[in-house]
Amino acid sequence: MDAVVSPLMRSSQGSRPPHASAASEAEVEAIAALARTRGATRLAIGSGRADDDLTTVRAVAARWEALGGEIVTTLTWPETAASWLRQATRFAAADPDLWIMTGSPAGWAQMTRRLLWSTSWRPARTILTAALSGRAALDLVGLVNLDGIAGVTASGDAWRIEHEVVIAPCVRT
Image (cartoon, rainbow, N blue to C red):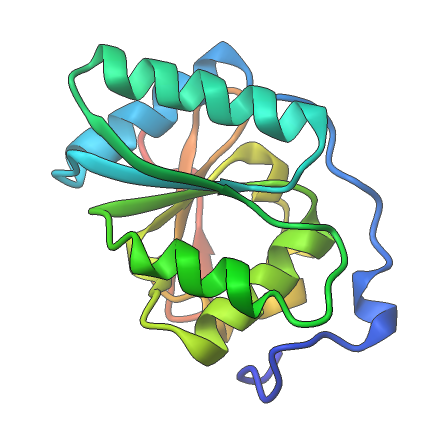
């Protein structure tokens, strides 16, 4: 896929099935471990508004705080919106060590495209949950636009994108 030339997806790109479920315990542990290996202390967590998304946000935040880390903000975005500009601006302004993102692929992709188009947010400072770790979700934004982004699977395996290639799985975290 080409570089993002507009923050909004074509309508046919967003017609993907919703993500599966809330994060598993192994996934939450892997997110925390991956964030620690990257030297993070301050996280911002963004998600869609579905119940499973909010459950994941609470689980990741609780685990991170139990490890002595700080959650600088949590933010939700809608599945559909006029532009996602307000949410993207607030999310990027938190300026954490790392951003954690979860949600449905279509909502996440729109939010991510807006972040890329309109803010200083960078994928290399972001970890995705298993809900967004599938190739179909990543292709909604395009691997060329996600260099350095990392994620985890439901079983706790980590992956990352380098030079438009998904390197997976990394060593289990």
